[in-house]
Image (tube, rainbow, N blue to C red; front, side, top):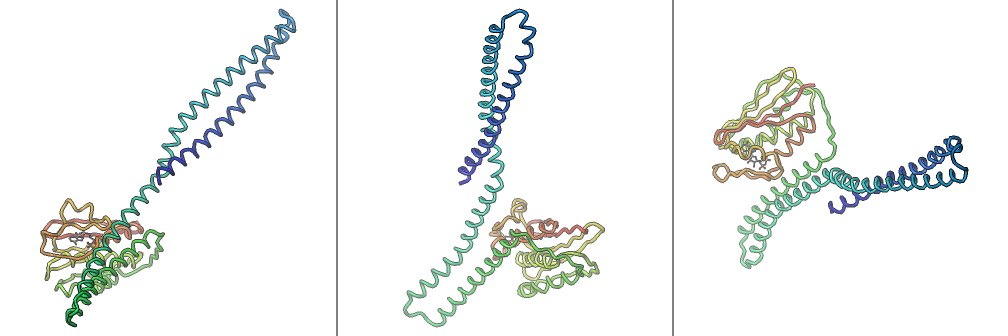
Length: 329
Ligand code: ADP
């Protein structure tokens, strides 16, 4: 599809170029003919002294034809060169013009393939469970209930996935940024409240700093990013550990960090963890966490829309610190 678009665009560029080149050539030919005819009229007096009027007219006609032919040949050669050079240049230009579209299409394709893979796994598992249950004519009520409970878990997972996909899709549009002066402490408290259940389930303590910093930011976005980071810190930590929220502010930069004592991230995975659907292999770890590999890519994109950026420091088996860096304007 892109190849045919490149061909079409190449010919469109080439057609414009050749129209201009041929137009200018015709104009040049016309102007040079007029200038030549005028020029050859000038020396008439001088030539008259030595030749007859008839001789001069035939000389003039021959010279005119010769020069016309020369000019025409030069213009034809110039247009052939323009065509060849223009074709190569048009092709390169067309490729360059369509490159961002090609990249966007490839990324969309990858996204659709990854998303459908993530959707297919829980759907297949639900389908096979239901089929087995339907084939069992003596299905007990307790078995039916446990099947429903297992299906409900899958449905919840699918719902989380569709929520995240929606969030990602919304970020593709121009975001509505609402920056207001807020007390940072309140944003931190709200984010911790949002993950309280998960933390309690694993007896994880979340340490909060005491800060009186107030900043003009889009607090909703910071809340969402912190929720993702806290959720991960809890997910990838052992029961009974501690997660720390830290704040540092100077004149130019505000940083908010989430530090955990969890499984840590392998150096080889560090660059990829912010990619959509990427999940590091945690098979060697005692912590088994569910997810779709979308949280960090959402957080990173959200941060970037505000001119913030994320950084991470992690040591395998020791823990990780994710930081949101917010320039103060
Ligand atoms: P998910 O957690 O749903 O897999 P994320 O995009 O939030 O997706 O994270 C991507 C991957 O980065 C995770 O699968 C995990 O391997 C790694 N990761 C993220 N946060 C942490 C953390 N705090 N500790 C260890 N690994 C983490």
